[in-house]
Length: 594
Ligand SMILES: [Zn+2]
Image (tube, rainbow, N blue to C red; front, top):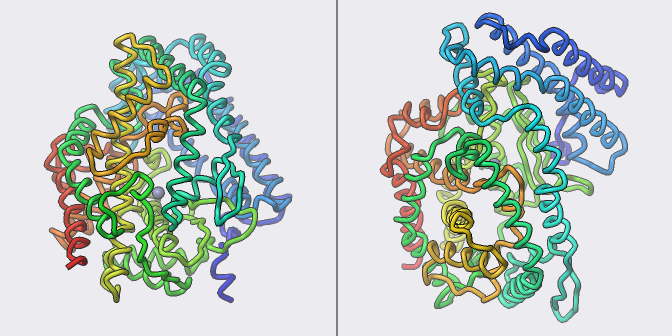
């Protein structure tokens, strides 16, 4: 019985689960996309406000109409990639989506041209619901090149920066490492070695780090060539596309501006002492004089081995949300009740966890592998926070206004984790339990807000070095990384010498057109801590404010969303609220030592 409860019911996504009917629906998805193309291709540039509204509404209706069938195929595959039917359907859905996307690709291009010529359309009253959607397109327009140039870039990237990315990926995933575990010599892949970093055995953690980074450092010529090519290419593209700084492309993609990122980064710089205080406290909890780099996110040695049952967790998580708001808690409960969560551990299931918004159904689906550990409880609260975001957003917005950028996307989820923390702390019976809960929250906060900030400094310093005409070989890049890292950690952590090669394995640095992927994580973490602080200060009157923020989806920029809460996120005072909250958690942890 309990087993069924932990398996999701995907049949709600489609009218019929009959294979032929699903195939037919996918075919009509392509046919309808082609019909839209036949109607509008070459004609968008001459549309007026009313005509444009019709097009956008039709596009949104189209998205909603076929969302369910695509989700059905994809989710079925993520639940069990060894299932032959799932394989077949996932492939069919992928092909159908690709063909539909190809057919509709002209819309964005023609829309860009239309807005470039008639920028006033953006503020036309008829299009008010799509205002911010159009603003975002308009912001990209000055950086678009001619069709021939864009095609040329795609062609040269394929064997240019995309090939470097692939080399980094393939090289990393095919490295093997020799290590002794419990007296046995083993040869492990990179992914398996990473699992050892969280081992309760300190010596094993140390050796795992040593072996991995010593190995990676030997190939510095490969990593340096790849990272240099990707960064230098970006500098050239910025020139061609008239981006004033290397960060501009990312600012546009994340719907923020330089002022916001500056105030965020300055707040981090001013508060490195807070993070270092936590790291020193953690050393004490671990019985060490100082943390080594392989201890920073390791579990506490005396953490109680708590096991949670599915129903007990459901109660914890639902109650945590109910405590915040009855309606929100009701939706979280509905996720369990309607079996929209797949928690069962099975072979062939996708690793990690995710939440897929189901806008047409005004709900969501969550996947995780539930093993009953505290981390699994947090994952569940996190993913259900995404679901709450979807419940609110799908009720208030059209799909075009629910394309949520990375800065805001984690608001519901991380907020949910803090609600869970409150609940778990209130029920914790021992000092060790409290310490384990607080360390979980603070480890995550420290990584997302501070460790990731080191990566922001590092990336910026690479572009500065390129601008100065410096040649970035492996040692030069390593020097930049160590300098950025030390800005955050000071002398609070001892680093193995080989940790200078930490930048070599970070896939994100090598992904073309994904520059400055990092500060949105810092933004998201500190944003939610600040919001949680406001909730603590304002109590129930804050609840509708957070709900309307989530309900706004992408219909407003992060700056506007904060303004509605009465805050200016270009000012450090807002971000300091997040630090105040973190400081309070650190105080609570410190008190457990008395
Ligand atoms: Zn998330």
